Image (cartoon, rainbow, N blue to C red; front, side, top):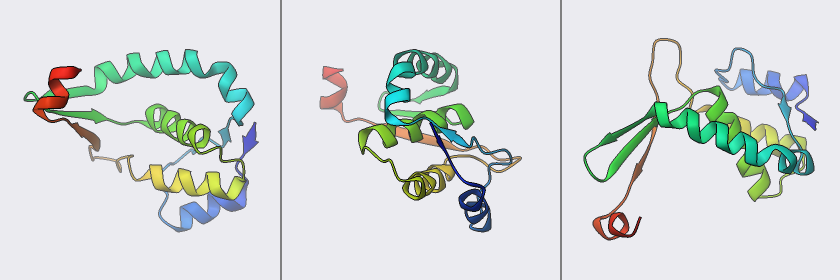
Length: 119
């Protein structure tokens, strides 16, 4: 388990971090692998209720802390990130997906007709 130090959290806040209670615990690669399948199922279910299709080729997913946490964990896993400072940078990048109070924020996914036909 990797605990993001208070200094890193303070630095992110100074840069405009919008998480009021940031999840300080990012699982290390080994620990995350142990729970990944279960967490992935949970997030897939959660995103079903947060997904809106617009036409045939465009989909929006309204993100929240859980979905963003999962994306951070997946990025840490995919890129094999182990340095606390690098993980803090990922938190900063993905924080942009979270809306400020009173706002909505979504990620979008689009696909072409040829991609749509095969999925």
